Length: 153
Image (tube, rainbow, N blue to C red; front, side):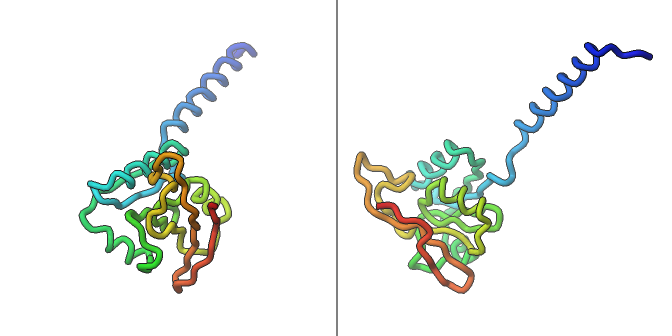
């Protein structure tokens, strides 16, 4: 059986189109973050929206008590905020900008995670008009060591 060049080209284009369609419908596991948050916290929901707008697939789970997830992640009280997320083996605490999460994943840093302690005004999800308080994104490890990952001034 002889296949013409044109027929072969059409088959190839069809297979490429099918492959692209399939890959865009699968969730991107490298960008999937699970977030544990209070069902009544509006700022947590706004942070989840921030992540989605920046290309993350978010599984938001409403829980009455986020403390067990902070303990599991090794997050000390001085690093705590209102919600806790997990992505690719890292813990993400509080209103960490999506760009810093992306940077962490790209660098594959040898840390346990990132935190924006407390709830600074102007962080993603904590916007209040033009007000932006200075804050630090802090990395932490399993031994409780911390280091400023990025400063926002």
